[in-house]
Image (spheres, rainbow, N blue to C red):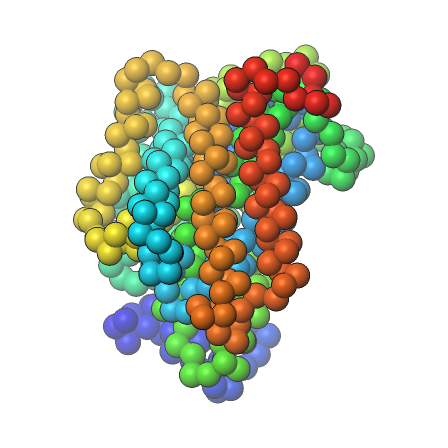
Length: 431
């Protein structure tokens, strides 16, 4: 890292904090960044599609799914960050070094499919927002999104800090937009509170959306990415300093993902308050935008689109970063950013040119992500529980048990979803 650069100065500041040369209430802020970047994955356009369908079709009933998914996300992002801080390697690299070669190839293939599904959602979301806001064809929205995304990716050459600040600013835009939305929308706060703590699954349609919410909230590429964002960020001299960095990381994960969780909850509440009574069939982002204008006014509709564009662009940047890290980690092979970007954009362009409904494509991409999710979850549980890999920082038995239960919950939901897809009757779930 160039010492005079913004990233170099950040690393020097982190060293000063760890060595006791820099103190104060805000000294720890120099460690913030990785969780904020990873949190973008939890506010991507796929969340918009599933959350709109959840709120419009089922009101506040599925809010508990959002809460549970966010708690699972906090756990796995914290563990991923810990893996990078302790080992100096990311999850893809450790999987390649410690797992059987055939399994590594399968993991890489599934992760690449997940990366394409991720980019489909992110790329389409930004394009839809630009198309509606500027009144241009969706295809042109995709072209503009591609150009802007590539332009932002060039900041990677200046180190980690400029990119963290850019992504942080876009996250701030998304959060501010949804703060405005919940202030405009007539939210039933009592019903929302009940929905957050009362597990229920009305029918098979709700199950599909619930799995989609999990797929849109706990993201495979974010689990890989977070370990890479922390692996070389802070230079530590001993285990005591490493523990301090872990403490700062855990605090950041909780705060960043709490914000992401509140944004997702706000999305569902907005859709529930605006659409559930009288417009429960609203299931598409375009329809939601056009319906918001007469219901809540042009300001609410405009803010919705601004947040969608910020979400699409920021998550598309982060998705490309993650895809590059996954390929390089598993295969020890790096490709230019423009080529990586082109490969992941192909499915999105193919969907639009084939005339597939954009929102339907977004929701199905989240289901694909949910099915791919157990791969990095199980790999992460294996790594953080392996003393040979983690040394003195091996995860405690209780942590491994909770993480395993969470992974099994996701696996079970996936099996139930597949059973519903193939027409197998599911107990306790109405058709």
